[in-house]
Amino acid sequence: MILSSCRYCAGPSLNWRIDLRNGRIRAHSRVASEARASAGASDWGGCGFDSRGSGRCGEEGLRREGAAMGAADKDVVEEILLGDLNEVGEIADSGEWASRHSVDHGVLCDVIKSLSGFELVDSKELSRESWFLEREGEEYVENGSAEMQVFLAVPPEGITLPDLKAKVGDKLLNVGQKNAMKNGWIVMQKPLMKRKVAEAEDIVRSQLVSIKDGQEVSPDVIKDLKKRNLIARKLWKGYEVCKGPKYALKRSKPATDVTREMLQTGAWKEQEFKAYNFEALGFPISGGYLHPLLKVRAQFRKIFLNMGFEEMPTNNFVESSFWNFDVLFQPQQHPARDSHDTFFLKTPATTVELPEDYLQRVKTMHEVGGHGSIGYGYDWKREEAEKNLLRTHTTAVSSRMLYKLAQEKFVPKRYYSIDRVFRNEAVDRTHLAEFHQIEGVVCDRGLTLGDLIGVLNEFFGRLGIKKLRFKPAYNPYTEPSMEIFSYHEQLKKWVEIGNSGMFRPEMLLPMGLPPDVNVIAWGLSLERPTMILYNIDNIRDLFGHKVDLEKVKSNPICRLGI
Ligand code: FB9
Image (cartoon, rainbow, N blue to C red; front, side):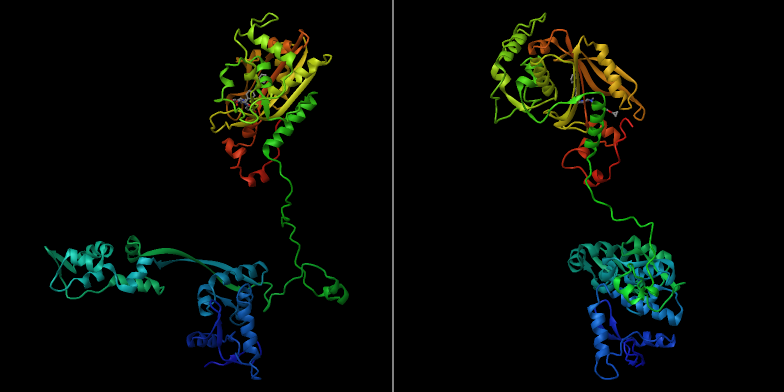
Protein backbone atom coordinates (compact mmCIF):
# COMPACT_ATOMS: atom_id res chain seq x y z
CA MET A 1 0.00 0.00 0.00
CA ILE A 2 1.64 3.26 -1.13
CA LEU A 3 1.19 6.09 1.35
CA SER A 4 1.14 9.65 0.05
CA SER A 5 -0.27 12.97 1.23
CA CYS A 6 -4.03 13.40 1.51
CA ARG A 7 -4.96 16.42 -0.57
CA TYR A 8 -7.66 17.31 1.88
CA CYS A 9 -5.77 17.06 5.18
CA ALA A 10 -2.30 16.47 3.74
CA GLY A 11 -2.29 13.42 6.03
CA PRO A 12 -0.97 10.10 4.74
CA SER A 13 -3.13 9.02 1.82
CA LEU A 14 -4.32 5.49 1.64
CA ASN A 15 -4.47 5.79 -2.12
CA TRP A 16 -8.13 5.48 -2.26
CA ARG A 17 -9.64 7.04 -5.17
CA ILE A 18 -13.10 7.96 -6.31
CA ASP A 19 -14.05 6.45 -9.65
CA LEU A 20 -15.63 9.51 -11.23
CA ARG A 21 -17.62 7.41 -13.63
CA ASN A 22 -19.70 5.76 -10.86
CA GLY A 23 -18.59 7.48 -7.62
CA ARG A 24 -17.40 4.24 -6.07
CA ILE A 25 -14.33 4.35 -3.77
CA ARG A 26 -11.63 2.16 -5.25
CA ALA A 27 -8.06 1.46 -4.26
CA HIS A 28 -5.62 2.70 -6.76
CA SER A 29 -4.48 -0.17 -8.89
CA ARG A 30 -1.10 -1.05 -7.56
CA VAL A 31 0.23 -0.43 -11.08
CA ALA A 32 -1.21 3.03 -11.30
CA SER A 33 -0.16 4.02 -7.79
CA GLU A 34 3.35 2.63 -8.31
CA ALA A 35 3.48 4.48 -11.64
CA ARG A 36 2.36 7.64 -9.94
CA ALA A 37 4.65 7.12 -6.98
CA SER A 38 7.58 6.41 -9.33
CA ALA A 39 6.59 9.55 -11.20
CA GLY A 40 6.71 11.22 -7.82
CA ALA A 41 3.12 12.22 -8.26
CA SER A 42 1.23 12.45 -5.02
CA ASP A 43 -2.00 10.65 -5.08
CA TRP A 44 -5.00 12.85 -5.37
CA GLY A 45 -7.03 10.39 -3.39
CA GLY A 46 -8.25 11.51 -0.02
CA CYS A 47 -6.71 9.80 3.00
CA GLY A 48 -10.17 8.53 3.39
CA PHE A 49 -9.77 8.90 7.07
CA ASP A 50 -8.16 11.95 8.52
CA SER A 51 -5.21 11.32 10.62
CA ARG A 52 -7.13 12.88 13.41
CA GLY A 53 -9.45 9.88 13.02
CA SER A 54 -12.58 11.98 12.69
CA GLY A 55 -12.93 10.63 9.20
CA ARG A 56 -13.72 14.14 8.12
CA CYS A 57 -11.26 14.18 5.21
CA GLY A 58 -12.62 11.09 3.61
CA GLU A 59 -16.12 12.22 4.18
CA GLU A 60 -15.15 15.73 3.10
CA GLY A 61 -13.54 14.22 0.03
CA LEU A 62 -16.39 11.80 -0.50
CA ARG A 63 -19.04 14.45 0.07
CA ARG A 64 -17.30 16.81 -2.25
CA GLU A 65 -16.65 14.20 -4.88
CA GLY A 66 -19.98 12.50 -4.36
CA ALA A 67 -22.03 15.64 -4.29
CA ALA A 68 -20.19 17.28 -7.05
CA MET A 69 -20.21 14.22 -9.27
CA GLY A 70 -22.20 16.20 -11.80
CA ALA A 71 -21.03 19.58 -12.90
CA ALA A 72 -18.08 19.61 -10.51
CA ASP A 73 -16.50 16.58 -12.23
CA LYS A 74 -14.77 19.19 -14.19
CA ASP A 75 -13.55 21.09 -11.15
CA VAL A 76 -12.18 17.91 -9.61
CA VAL A 77 -10.49 16.80 -12.83
CA GLU A 78 -9.13 20.32 -13.31
CA GLU A 79 -7.60 20.31 -9.85
CA ILE A 80 -6.03 16.88 -10.36
CA LEU A 81 -4.69 17.84 -13.75
CA LEU A 82 -3.19 21.12 -12.56
CA GLY A 83 -1.80 19.28 -9.52
CA ASP A 84 -0.27 16.61 -11.70
CA LEU A 85 1.18 19.12 -14.15
CA ASN A 86 2.82 20.75 -11.20
CA GLU A 87 4.59 17.52 -10.54
CA VAL A 88 5.21 15.95 -13.93
CA GLY A 89 5.34 19.18 -15.95
CA GLU A 90 3.62 17.79 -19.01
CA ILE A 91 1.14 15.14 -19.99
CA ALA A 92 2.10 13.37 -23.17
CA ASP A 93 -1.25 11.72 -23.85
CA SER A 94 -4.59 12.75 -22.32
CA GLY A 95 -6.07 9.35 -23.20
CA GLU A 96 -3.47 7.43 -21.26
CA TRP A 97 -3.71 9.99 -18.40
CA ALA A 98 -7.49 9.69 -18.27
CA SER A 99 -7.47 5.92 -18.03
CA ARG A 100 -4.68 6.07 -15.44
CA HIS A 101 -6.85 8.41 -13.36
CA SER A 102 -10.08 6.68 -14.40
CA VAL A 103 -11.40 9.97 -15.51
CA ASP A 104 -13.82 10.27 -18.40
CA HIS A 105 -11.65 11.36 -21.34
CA GLY A 106 -14.45 13.59 -22.65
CA VAL A 107 -14.62 15.49 -19.35
CA LEU A 108 -10.83 15.78 -19.38
CA CYS A 109 -10.80 17.21 -22.92
CA ASP A 110 -13.38 19.84 -21.97
CA VAL A 111 -11.25 20.80 -18.99
CA ILE A 112 -8.10 20.99 -21.12
CA LYS A 113 -9.89 23.15 -23.71
CA SER A 114 -11.17 25.49 -21.06
CA LEU A 115 -7.79 25.73 -19.26
CA SER A 116 -6.14 26.43 -22.61
CA GLY A 117 -8.61 29.24 -23.09
CA PHE A 118 -7.40 30.78 -19.87
CA GLU A 119 -3.78 29.96 -20.80
CA LEU A 120 -3.30 27.95 -17.62
CA VAL A 121 -2.14 25.16 -19.88
CA ASP A 122 -0.89 24.81 -23.42
CA SER A 123 -2.36 21.88 -25.29
CA LYS A 124 -1.63 20.28 -28.65
CA GLU A 125 -4.33 18.20 -30.27
CA LEU A 126 -3.55 14.54 -30.78
CA SER A 127 -5.61 12.28 -32.98
CA ARG A 128 -5.22 8.68 -33.78
CA GLU A 129 -7.25 6.15 -35.57
CA SER A 130 -8.45 3.27 -33.49
CA TRP A 131 -10.67 0.34 -34.18
CA PHE A 132 -13.44 -0.99 -31.99
CA LEU A 133 -15.47 -4.15 -32.21
CA GLU A 134 -18.92 -4.04 -33.74
CA ARG A 135 -21.65 -5.96 -31.90
CA GLU A 136 -20.97 -9.09 -34.01
CA GLY A 137 -17.24 -8.77 -33.24
CA GLU A 138 -18.07 -8.68 -29.52
CA GLU A 139 -20.16 -11.84 -29.99
CA TYR A 140 -17.24 -13.61 -31.69
CA VAL A 141 -14.99 -12.71 -28.76
CA GLU A 142 -17.71 -14.00 -26.47
CA ASN A 143 -18.61 -17.20 -28.33
CA GLY A 144 -15.84 -17.70 -30.93
CA SER A 145 -15.90 -16.74 -34.59
CA ALA A 146 -18.68 -18.05 -36.81
CA GLU A 147 -16.32 -20.47 -38.56
CA MET A 148 -15.11 -21.78 -35.19
CA GLN A 149 -18.64 -22.21 -33.93
CA VAL A 150 -19.55 -24.10 -37.11
CA PHE A 151 -16.38 -26.18 -36.90
CA LEU A 152 -17.14 -27.09 -33.32
CA ALA A 153 -20.67 -28.00 -34.30
CA VAL A 154 -19.47 -30.53 -36.87
CA PRO A 155 -18.94 -33.79 -35.02
CA PRO A 156 -16.07 -36.00 -36.24
CA GLU A 157 -18.66 -38.38 -37.75
CA GLY A 158 -20.08 -35.54 -39.80
CA ILE A 159 -23.49 -33.88 -39.81
CA THR A 160 -26.17 -33.09 -42.33
CA LEU A 161 -26.62 -29.46 -43.25
CA PRO A 162 -30.16 -29.21 -41.81
CA ASP A 163 -28.89 -30.58 -38.50
CA LEU A 164 -25.91 -28.25 -38.64
CA LYS A 165 -28.25 -25.33 -39.35
CA ALA A 166 -30.39 -26.41 -36.43
CA LYS A 167 -27.30 -26.39 -34.24
CA VAL A 168 -25.76 -23.03 -35.15
CA GLY A 169 -28.59 -21.19 -36.83
CA ASP A 170 -28.93 -19.63 -40.26
CA LYS A 171 -26.75 -16.56 -39.85
CA LEU A 172 -23.78 -18.26 -38.30
CA LEU A 173 -23.98 -21.13 -40.76
CA ASN A 174 -23.83 -18.88 -43.81
CA VAL A 175 -20.74 -17.01 -42.63
CA GLY A 176 -19.14 -19.83 -40.65
CA GLN A 177 -19.46 -22.62 -43.20
CA LYS A 178 -17.94 -20.49 -45.96
CA ASN A 179 -14.91 -19.47 -43.86
CA ALA A 180 -14.44 -22.86 -42.20
CA MET A 181 -14.34 -24.48 -45.63
CA LYS A 182 -12.03 -21.71 -46.89
CA ASN A 183 -9.76 -22.43 -43.91
CA GLY A 184 -9.85 -26.12 -44.85
CA TRP A 185 -11.41 -27.08 -41.54
CA ILE A 186 -14.48 -28.81 -42.93
CA VAL A 187 -15.59 -30.37 -46.18
CA MET A 188 -18.91 -31.35 -47.69
CA GLN A 189 -19.12 -35.04 -48.38
CA LYS A 190 -22.72 -35.13 -49.42
CA PRO A 191 -24.93 -35.63 -47.56
CA LEU A 192 -22.66 -34.86 -44.61
CA MET A 193 -20.47 -31.95 -43.61
CA LYS A 194 -17.29 -33.44 -42.28
CA ARG A 195 -14.22 -32.19 -40.43
CA LYS A 196 -10.98 -32.07 -42.40
CA VAL A 197 -8.89 -31.29 -39.31
CA ALA A 198 -9.04 -32.49 -35.74
CA GLU A 199 -8.75 -29.04 -34.26
CA ALA A 200 -8.53 -25.45 -35.43
CA GLU A 201 -7.26 -22.19 -34.04
CA ASP A 202 -9.69 -19.27 -33.92
CA ILE A 203 -7.33 -16.65 -35.37
CA VAL A 204 -10.21 -14.29 -36.01
CA ARG A 205 -11.23 -14.31 -32.36
CA SER A 206 -7.74 -13.66 -31.09
CA GLN A 207 -7.34 -10.85 -33.64
CA LEU A 208 -10.56 -9.33 -32.30
CA VAL A 209 -9.31 -9.70 -28.73
CA SER A 210 -6.07 -7.91 -29.59
CA ILE A 211 -8.04 -5.05 -31.12
CA LYS A 212 -10.30 -4.96 -28.09
CA ASP A 213 -7.19 -4.63 -25.90
CA GLY A 214 -5.97 -1.81 -28.09
CA GLN A 215 -3.01 -3.77 -29.40
CA GLU A 216 -1.61 -3.02 -32.87
CA VAL A 217 -2.78 -5.47 -35.58
CA SER A 218 -1.60 -5.59 -39.20
CA PRO A 219 -3.44 -3.49 -41.82
CA ASP A 220 -4.62 -6.50 -43.82
CA VAL A 221 -6.12 -8.06 -40.68
CA ILE A 222 -7.93 -4.75 -40.20
CA LYS A 223 -9.02 -4.88 -43.82
CA ASP A 224 -10.46 -8.44 -43.50
CA LEU A 225 -12.24 -7.83 -40.21
CA LYS A 226 -13.63 -4.54 -41.51
CA LYS A 227 -14.86 -6.28 -44.63
CA ARG A 228 -16.71 -8.72 -42.34
CA ASN A 229 -18.14 -5.72 -40.41
CA LEU A 230 -16.68 -7.12 -37.25
CA ILE A 231 -14.82 -3.88 -36.46
CA ALA A 232 -15.29 -0.20 -37.15
CA ARG A 233 -12.95 2.75 -37.24
CA LYS A 234 -12.97 5.33 -34.48
CA LEU A 235 -11.00 8.51 -34.66
CA TRP A 236 -9.65 9.20 -31.26
CA LYS A 237 -8.92 12.83 -30.38
CA GLY A 238 -6.86 13.82 -27.36
CA TYR A 239 -4.29 16.30 -26.21
CA GLU A 240 -0.71 16.70 -25.20
CA VAL A 241 -0.70 19.16 -22.30
CA CYS A 242 1.92 21.26 -20.54
CA LYS A 243 1.87 24.26 -18.27
CA GLY A 244 0.63 27.46 -19.90
CA PRO A 245 1.86 31.04 -19.48
CA LYS A 246 -0.78 31.61 -16.78
CA TYR A 247 -0.29 28.18 -15.14
CA ALA A 248 -1.47 27.96 -11.52
CA LEU A 249 -2.33 25.06 -9.27
CA LYS A 250 -5.82 26.41 -9.00
CA ARG A 251 -7.71 28.47 -11.55
CA SER A 252 -8.60 31.76 -10.03
CA LYS A 253 -12.02 32.64 -11.12
CA PRO A 254 -11.49 36.16 -12.46
CA ALA A 255 -14.30 38.36 -11.22
CA THR A 256 -16.72 39.62 -13.84
CA ASP A 257 -18.08 42.48 -11.71
CA VAL A 258 -16.83 45.01 -9.18
CA THR A 259 -19.08 44.35 -6.19
CA ARG A 260 -19.97 46.65 -3.33
CA GLU A 261 -18.10 44.34 -0.93
CA MET A 262 -14.93 44.54 -3.04
CA LEU A 263 -15.15 48.34 -2.99
CA GLN A 264 -15.84 48.39 0.77
CA THR A 265 -13.10 45.87 1.57
CA GLY A 266 -10.69 47.17 -1.09
CA ALA A 267 -10.44 43.57 -2.29
CA TRP A 268 -10.88 44.87 -5.85
CA LYS A 269 -7.24 46.04 -5.73
CA GLU A 270 -5.78 42.54 -5.97
CA GLN A 271 -8.86 40.89 -7.48
CA GLU A 272 -8.22 39.54 -11.01
CA PHE A 273 -10.99 40.68 -13.34
CA LYS A 274 -12.18 38.77 -16.44
CA ALA A 275 -11.06 40.66 -19.52
CA TYR A 276 -13.84 42.33 -21.47
CA ASN A 277 -14.46 40.38 -24.60
CA PHE A 278 -15.43 43.18 -26.95
CA GLU A 279 -15.94 40.60 -29.68
CA ALA A 280 -18.62 38.87 -27.66
CA LEU A 281 -21.93 39.16 -29.42
CA GLY A 282 -24.48 40.30 -26.89
CA PHE A 283 -27.60 38.26 -26.34
CA PRO A 284 -29.60 38.45 -29.54
CA ILE A 285 -32.21 41.06 -28.72
CA SER A 286 -35.45 39.25 -29.40
CA GLY A 287 -37.87 41.84 -30.62
CA GLY A 288 -40.69 41.80 -33.14
CA TYR A 289 -39.87 40.47 -36.55
CA LEU A 290 -41.66 41.51 -39.68
CA HIS A 291 -42.62 38.68 -42.04
CA PRO A 292 -41.00 39.35 -45.45
CA LEU A 293 -44.48 39.82 -46.97
CA LEU A 294 -45.18 42.67 -44.57
CA LYS A 295 -41.80 44.29 -45.35
CA VAL A 296 -42.52 44.23 -49.08
CA ARG A 297 -46.08 45.44 -48.40
CA ALA A 298 -44.64 48.37 -46.49
CA GLN A 299 -42.45 49.24 -49.51
CA PHE A 300 -45.43 49.10 -51.87
CA ARG A 301 -47.47 51.19 -49.44
CA LYS A 302 -44.75 53.81 -49.32
CA ILE A 303 -44.61 53.98 -53.12
CA PHE A 304 -48.41 54.35 -53.43
CA LEU A 305 -48.57 57.01 -50.70
CA ASN A 306 -45.68 58.90 -52.27
CA MET A 307 -47.60 58.82 -55.54
CA GLY A 308 -50.61 60.39 -53.79
CA PHE A 309 -52.74 57.24 -53.58
CA GLU A 310 -55.02 56.61 -50.63
CA GLU A 311 -55.54 53.11 -49.21
CA MET A 312 -58.92 51.45 -49.70
CA PRO A 313 -60.56 49.72 -46.72
CA THR A 314 -60.09 45.98 -47.43
CA ASN A 315 -61.25 44.63 -44.06
CA ASN A 316 -63.92 42.34 -45.51
CA PHE A 317 -62.74 38.99 -46.86
CA VAL A 318 -66.39 37.97 -47.32
CA GLU A 319 -68.03 39.71 -50.28
CA SER A 320 -71.25 39.34 -52.26
CA SER A 321 -71.08 38.11 -55.88
CA PHE A 322 -72.71 41.45 -56.74
CA TRP A 323 -69.68 43.60 -55.79
CA ASN A 324 -67.10 40.88 -56.62
CA PHE A 325 -68.45 40.05 -60.09
CA ASP A 326 -71.72 41.66 -61.25
CA VAL A 327 -70.80 45.33 -60.86
CA LEU A 328 -67.55 44.50 -62.73
CA PHE A 329 -69.80 43.46 -65.66
CA GLN A 330 -68.58 39.84 -65.21
CA PRO A 331 -71.39 37.68 -66.62
CA GLN A 332 -73.05 35.25 -64.20
CA GLN A 333 -72.10 32.20 -66.23
CA HIS A 334 -68.40 33.25 -66.36
CA PRO A 335 -66.24 30.21 -65.38
CA ALA A 336 -64.60 32.20 -62.59
CA ARG A 337 -68.00 32.41 -60.94
CA ASP A 338 -68.38 28.74 -60.25
CA SER A 339 -67.12 26.98 -57.19
CA HIS A 340 -64.16 25.54 -59.09
CA ASP A 341 -62.53 28.94 -58.90
CA THR A 342 -64.39 30.66 -56.10
CA PHE A 343 -65.05 29.80 -52.45
CA PHE A 344 -68.79 30.36 -51.94
CA LEU A 345 -70.08 30.59 -48.35
CA LYS A 346 -72.49 28.08 -46.89
CA THR A 347 -73.43 30.50 -44.04
CA PRO A 348 -74.22 33.26 -44.49
CA ALA A 349 -74.90 31.97 -48.01
CA THR A 350 -76.44 35.21 -49.29
CA THR A 351 -75.98 38.92 -48.69
CA VAL A 352 -78.70 40.88 -46.94
CA GLU A 353 -78.52 44.25 -48.56
CA LEU A 354 -77.70 45.52 -52.03
CA PRO A 355 -78.33 49.08 -53.31
CA GLU A 356 -81.64 48.42 -55.13
CA ASP A 357 -81.56 51.12 -57.80
CA TYR A 358 -77.95 50.45 -58.63
CA LEU A 359 -78.70 46.74 -58.81
CA GLN A 360 -81.39 47.37 -61.41
CA ARG A 361 -78.92 49.34 -63.51
CA VAL A 362 -76.38 46.51 -63.27
CA LYS A 363 -79.05 43.99 -64.19
CA THR A 364 -79.98 46.07 -67.19
CA MET A 365 -76.37 46.46 -68.31
CA HIS A 366 -75.83 42.69 -68.15
CA GLU A 367 -79.10 41.86 -69.89
CA VAL A 368 -79.41 44.56 -72.58
CA GLY A 369 -76.40 46.83 -72.15
CA GLY A 370 -76.78 50.61 -72.59
CA HIS A 371 -74.59 53.62 -73.25
CA GLY A 372 -73.56 51.97 -76.52
CA SER A 373 -72.99 48.56 -75.05
CA ILE A 374 -75.16 45.61 -76.09
CA GLY A 375 -74.68 43.90 -72.74
CA TYR A 376 -74.56 40.11 -72.57
CA GLY A 377 -78.22 39.49 -73.45
CA TYR A 378 -78.84 36.84 -70.80
CA ASP A 379 -81.36 36.68 -68.03
CA TRP A 380 -79.53 38.16 -65.03
CA LYS A 381 -80.47 36.53 -61.68
CA ARG A 382 -80.61 38.50 -58.45
CA GLU A 383 -80.10 35.35 -56.32
CA GLU A 384 -76.81 34.68 -58.20
CA ALA A 385 -75.62 38.19 -57.28
CA GLU A 386 -76.63 37.71 -53.66
CA LYS A 387 -74.36 34.68 -53.17
CA ASN A 388 -71.64 35.36 -50.58
CA LEU A 389 -68.08 34.31 -51.30
CA LEU A 390 -64.52 34.90 -50.25
CA ARG A 391 -63.45 37.78 -52.48
CA THR A 392 -61.41 36.61 -55.47
CA HIS A 393 -59.77 40.00 -56.00
CA THR A 394 -59.48 43.35 -54.25
CA THR A 395 -61.08 44.81 -57.38
CA ALA A 396 -64.30 44.08 -55.43
CA VAL A 397 -63.16 46.77 -53.00
CA SER A 398 -62.34 49.12 -55.91
CA SER A 399 -65.87 48.67 -57.26
CA ARG A 400 -67.38 49.64 -53.88
CA MET A 401 -65.07 52.69 -53.66
CA LEU A 402 -65.88 53.78 -57.23
CA TYR A 403 -69.63 53.38 -56.59
CA LYS A 404 -69.27 55.44 -53.39
CA LEU A 405 -67.28 58.06 -55.37
CA ALA A 406 -70.04 58.16 -57.95
CA GLN A 407 -72.58 58.97 -55.23
CA GLU A 408 -70.65 62.10 -54.37
CA LYS A 409 -69.65 65.05 -56.52
CA PHE A 410 -66.93 63.59 -58.75
CA VAL A 411 -63.34 64.38 -57.85
CA PRO A 412 -60.32 62.69 -59.39
CA LYS A 413 -59.09 59.90 -57.13
CA ARG A 414 -56.10 57.59 -56.73
CA TYR A 415 -56.77 54.50 -54.68
CA TYR A 416 -54.75 51.44 -53.78
CA SER A 417 -55.36 48.23 -51.91
CA ILE A 418 -53.09 45.46 -50.66
CA ASP A 419 -54.86 42.57 -49.00
CA ARG A 420 -55.82 38.91 -49.19
CA VAL A 421 -57.89 37.40 -51.96
CA PHE A 422 -59.03 33.80 -52.26
CA ARG A 423 -59.17 31.59 -55.35
CA ASN A 424 -60.06 27.90 -55.36
CA GLU A 425 -57.01 27.09 -57.49
CA ALA A 426 -54.64 24.14 -57.66
CA VAL A 427 -51.87 24.76 -55.14
CA ASP A 428 -48.38 24.61 -56.63
CA ARG A 429 -44.90 26.13 -56.12
CA THR A 430 -46.18 29.65 -56.80
CA HIS A 431 -49.90 29.42 -56.10
CA LEU A 432 -51.85 28.93 -52.86
CA ALA A 433 -55.64 29.20 -52.44
CA GLU A 434 -55.07 32.73 -51.17
CA PHE A 435 -52.60 35.48 -51.95
CA HIS A 436 -52.26 39.21 -51.37
CA GLN A 437 -53.39 41.32 -54.31
CA ILE A 438 -51.89 44.74 -54.85
CA GLU A 439 -54.20 47.03 -56.84
CA GLY A 440 -53.86 50.59 -58.06
CA VAL A 441 -56.83 52.61 -59.37
CA VAL A 442 -56.78 56.09 -60.91
CA CYS A 443 -60.00 57.75 -61.94
CA ASP A 444 -60.18 61.05 -63.68
CA ARG A 445 -61.79 62.69 -66.64
CA GLY A 446 -60.36 61.76 -70.04
CA LEU A 447 -57.81 59.23 -68.82
CA THR A 448 -56.33 57.15 -71.61
CA LEU A 449 -54.38 53.94 -72.08
CA GLY A 450 -51.30 56.15 -72.38
CA ASP A 451 -51.99 57.44 -68.88
CA LEU A 452 -52.17 53.86 -67.70
CA ILE A 453 -48.83 53.02 -69.34
CA GLY A 454 -47.37 56.21 -67.87
CA VAL A 455 -48.57 55.42 -64.37
CA LEU A 456 -47.31 51.82 -64.66
CA ASN A 457 -43.87 53.02 -65.71
CA GLU A 458 -43.84 55.44 -62.78
CA PHE A 459 -45.08 52.85 -60.31
CA PHE A 460 -42.78 49.99 -61.37
CA GLY A 461 -39.97 52.49 -61.91
CA ARG A 462 -40.13 53.26 -58.22
CA LEU A 463 -39.75 49.53 -57.60
CA GLY A 464 -36.55 49.60 -59.56
CA ILE A 465 -38.29 47.86 -62.45
CA LYS A 466 -37.37 49.92 -65.46
CA LYS A 467 -37.98 48.10 -68.72
CA LEU A 468 -41.69 47.22 -69.09
CA ARG A 469 -43.48 45.52 -71.96
CA PHE A 470 -47.25 45.28 -72.34
CA LYS A 471 -49.15 42.37 -73.88
CA PRO A 472 -52.82 42.73 -74.81
CA ALA A 473 -54.92 40.64 -72.45
CA TYR A 474 -58.54 40.09 -71.49
CA ASN A 475 -60.35 40.79 -68.25
CA PRO A 476 -64.20 40.82 -68.07
CA TYR A 477 -64.10 44.26 -66.41
CA THR A 478 -61.40 46.13 -68.35
CA GLU A 479 -61.09 46.91 -72.03
CA PRO A 480 -58.40 47.34 -73.26
CA SER A 481 -56.44 45.13 -70.89
CA MET A 482 -52.72 44.52 -70.77
CA GLU A 483 -50.47 42.02 -69.07
CA ILE A 484 -47.34 43.74 -67.78
CA PHE A 485 -43.90 42.22 -68.27
CA SER A 486 -40.43 43.29 -67.08
CA TYR A 487 -37.03 41.91 -67.97
CA HIS A 488 -35.55 40.28 -64.85
CA GLU A 489 -31.72 40.66 -64.94
CA GLN A 490 -31.02 37.76 -62.56
CA LEU A 491 -33.61 35.40 -64.03
CA LYS A 492 -32.46 36.51 -67.51
CA LYS A 493 -36.10 36.44 -68.78
CA TRP A 494 -39.22 38.56 -69.21
CA VAL A 495 -41.39 38.01 -66.11
CA GLU A 496 -45.13 38.70 -66.00
CA ILE A 497 -45.37 41.25 -63.20
CA GLY A 498 -49.05 42.07 -63.32
CA ASN A 499 -52.23 42.83 -65.20
CA SER A 500 -54.00 46.09 -65.98
CA GLY A 501 -56.67 47.80 -67.99
CA MET A 502 -59.28 50.49 -68.32
CA PHE A 503 -62.53 49.68 -66.48
CA ARG A 504 -65.35 49.19 -68.96
CA PRO A 505 -68.09 51.79 -69.24
CA GLU A 506 -70.50 48.92 -68.59
CA MET A 507 -68.95 48.92 -65.08
CA LEU A 508 -68.55 52.66 -64.51
CA LEU A 509 -71.74 54.14 -65.98
CA PRO A 510 -74.25 52.10 -63.96
CA MET A 511 -72.40 53.42 -60.89
CA GLY A 512 -73.31 56.90 -61.94
CA LEU A 513 -69.83 58.17 -62.71
CA PRO A 514 -69.75 61.00 -65.24
CA PRO A 515 -69.35 59.52 -68.77
CA ASP A 516 -66.05 61.35 -69.36
CA VAL A 517 -64.52 59.83 -66.30
CA ASN A 518 -62.22 56.95 -67.10
CA VAL A 519 -60.67 54.63 -64.57
CA ILE A 520 -57.34 52.95 -65.16
CA ALA A 521 -56.25 50.16 -62.86
CA TRP A 522 -53.66 47.47 -62.44
CA GLY A 523 -52.94 44.56 -60.18
CA LEU A 524 -50.20 42.21 -59.12
CA SER A 525 -49.51 39.90 -56.24
CA LEU A 526 -47.44 40.61 -53.15
CA GLU A 527 -46.15 37.03 -52.95
CA ARG A 528 -44.39 36.95 -56.34
CA PRO A 529 -42.11 39.97 -55.80
CA THR A 530 -41.45 38.81 -52.22
CA MET A 531 -40.44 35.34 -53.43
CA ILE A 532 -38.12 36.86 -56.01
CA LEU A 533 -36.62 39.39 -53.62
CA TYR A 534 -36.06 36.86 -50.82
CA ASN A 535 -35.10 33.99 -53.17
CA ILE A 536 -37.90 31.87 -51.88
CA ASP A 537 -38.55 29.16 -54.40
CA ASN A 538 -41.70 27.63 -52.99
CA ILE A 539 -44.62 29.79 -51.86
CA ARG A 540 -45.24 27.31 -48.99
CA ASP A 541 -41.96 28.45 -47.42
CA LEU A 542 -43.23 32.03 -47.57
CA PHE A 543 -46.82 31.72 -46.40
CA GLY A 544 -48.60 29.18 -44.26
CA HIS A 545 -47.94 26.70 -41.45
CA LYS A 546 -44.72 25.42 -42.99
CA VAL A 547 -42.95 28.80 -42.69
CA ASP A 548 -39.64 28.49 -40.80
CA LEU A 549 -39.92 31.13 -38.06
CA GLU A 550 -36.12 31.32 -37.73
CA LYS A 551 -36.05 32.50 -41.35
CA VAL A 552 -38.67 35.12 -40.49
CA LYS A 553 -36.53 36.23 -37.55
CA SER A 554 -33.41 36.50 -39.70
CA ASN A 555 -34.75 37.79 -43.02
CA PRO A 556 -32.93 40.89 -44.36
CA ILE A 557 -34.54 44.28 -45.01
CA CYS A 558 -36.61 44.58 -48.17
CA ARG A 559 -34.43 46.25 -50.82
CA LEU A 560 -37.34 46.84 -53.22
CA GLY A 561 -36.98 50.20 -55.00
CA ILE A 562 -33.91 50.98 -52.92
O1 FB9 B 1 -47.63 39.51 -59.43
C1 FB9 B 1 -47.35 38.97 -60.45
N1 FB9 B 1 -46.09 38.87 -60.91
C2 FB9 B 1 -45.01 39.55 -60.36
C3 FB9 B 1 -45.17 40.79 -59.79
C4 FB9 B 1 -44.02 41.50 -59.31
C5 FB9 B 1 -42.78 40.94 -59.40
O2 FB9 B 1 -41.74 41.69 -58.87
C6 FB9 B 1 -40.45 41.29 -59.06
C7 FB9 B 1 -39.52 41.96 -58.14
C8 FB9 B 1 -39.53 42.09 -59.63
C9 FB9 B 1 -42.64 39.66 -59.95
C10 FB9 B 1 -43.77 38.96 -60.45
N2 FB9 B 1 -48.33 38.44 -61.28
C11 FB9 B 1 -49.67 38.64 -60.93
C12 FB9 B 1 -47.98 37.73 -62.50
C13 FB9 B 1 -47.91 36.27 -62.38
O3 FB9 B 1 -47.20 35.91 -61.24
C14 FB9 B 1 -49.24 35.52 -62.40
O4 FB9 B 1 -48.91 34.22 -62.77
C15 FB9 B 1 -49.93 35.36 -61.13
N3 FB9 B 1 -50.74 36.45 -60.83
C16 FB9 B 1 -51.72 36.33 -59.78
C17 FB9 B 1 -53.04 35.83 -60.13
O5 FB9 B 1 -52.87 34.46 -60.32
C18 FB9 B 1 -54.02 33.95 -60.70
C19 FB9 B 1 -50.18 37.57 -60.10
C20 FB9 B 1 -51.51 37.72 -59.43
C21 FB9 B 1 -52.38 38.77 -60.03
C22 FB9 B 1 -52.79 38.79 -61.32
C23 FB9 B 1 -53.59 39.83 -61.78
C24 FB9 B 1 -54.02 40.84 -60.97
C25 FB9 B 1 -53.61 40.79 -59.65
C26 FB9 B 1 -52.80 39.77 -59.17
C27 FB9 B 1 -54.81 41.88 -61.45
C28 FB9 B 1 -55.43 42.75 -61.87
C29 FB9 B 1 -56.18 43.85 -62.36
C30 FB9 B 1 -56.29 44.05 -63.70
C31 FB9 B 1 -56.99 45.12 -64.15
C32 FB9 B 1 -57.58 46.00 -63.26
C33 FB9 B 1 -57.47 45.80 -61.91
C34 FB9 B 1 -56.75 44.71 -61.45
